[in-house]
Length: 634
Image (cartoon, rainbow, N blue to C red):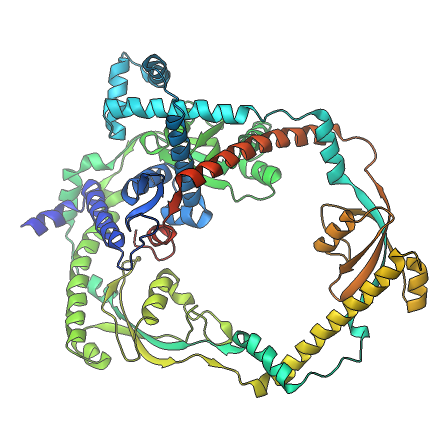
């Protein structure tokens, strides 16, 4: 009866989310148990990290992260891939370090000050005759907090803010002279003469002995390794055939819809474009560009050089958004831009694309989804039954052929692959199984030859078992086959070393004023090439590279330097230096502003680094990857 009730109720949107939430918690429990264990620096395997004596528990961290990401319309997997999970964790760690520092130095915020801060939050929301207490009660209910916890949280945040403002405030001034000097340093240009000595000019390289080549082979042996590979067969349940046998009546669907009509009422929504930027200055510049007529995506690209901070337009309900963003979005008119506003993920700028009025989804519009929900529930039951049956057969020693005769399963022979999933000619052997790549690789390289894993439920809902048919151990290409290649490398290395020694001797000659660079070039049968206005920053002109440019700008004017090029070594004479004509006042002001911001951030980061050393910070990176990385179960 209990299962029947669940099946009936699961067709509703509300119970669907309840069931999904339960499954997530169950999966979370499995992940938290973490068979391998991650006990590092005194943190348990279910902790994301520790700051001083304060633990960052995985469950509470996950709840906060998901609440934030849900309001941005972003999944944890996407956030992990883009680096937002690390950014969110870093924000949490910094907050705890500042909190512990404020407590240690005795920053104590009075109750009157806290009450004033709470009033600033509550009063703007007290509309339509509601009292401030009613608004506060609603906030506490939505956040799952007691009034005491809320008050202490606000007090802590105010204290943290006082300390952070004190840290940043002392490093906000940059003199005009300092900004001009740094601008000139960055924009300096140099005129040089260069003479190139290619390695290939050295012909008489002493032939290496067999012992020398074998020693080089030994040092480079891993370059000639043929990685261990596995022949793997996947067993999967044919869920399409199972799904075709499931019948759902129209009456069942209609009853489920009528019983849960409230679940199909859609509140007013806002269609928003968003951007998440690193600094308030960037966000302000993007907002200004949008307000002057540019698209949000175009403004982001113009300001940052790329559009990775852009999030395409999505529909949001007010309760499903971060409060900071909802406050702007639900007061804006269609086409308005808003921001910058800061959240744990960065600085946001939004554009309101449309206002979608409230509505109720019709039965016809949700009937298909309802049917799929019913089918999925019944299908899941049958899949689990079949998976258990296959596990029983495997435990009894049944072969793959015997299992295929007993149960409707598919078998897929994968291309031979190594531990990175690479097959022949370094092609991706798992390109058709990207969703389950991590699980397939880890399981395949844990099993012995001839072994088969238990049936496993994948992150995409599929059930798979992995059978290792054959193992090809790691091998190395024999020295005899690689001798010619190794000898070639030996000769190239020796030629480069001897050429550099030759050019170093020539450098000594010009530095001692025995010869000029042009005279030395004539003597060596070389041509002097002149390069004008070589810049400290930007793309280096041929044959220079970025490392060579750094050496040139470290050399004195009228001095000499030895640099390496792609083809050999070269001598350089620094003839003169110059600066761009006309002072660029706008660029100098922008640099001054950036220096001030950079100074503030540097002071704050230095303080945070110091407190990190004092209190100790430990991060469980493995657990983060398991929770949110590719192939995660959550």
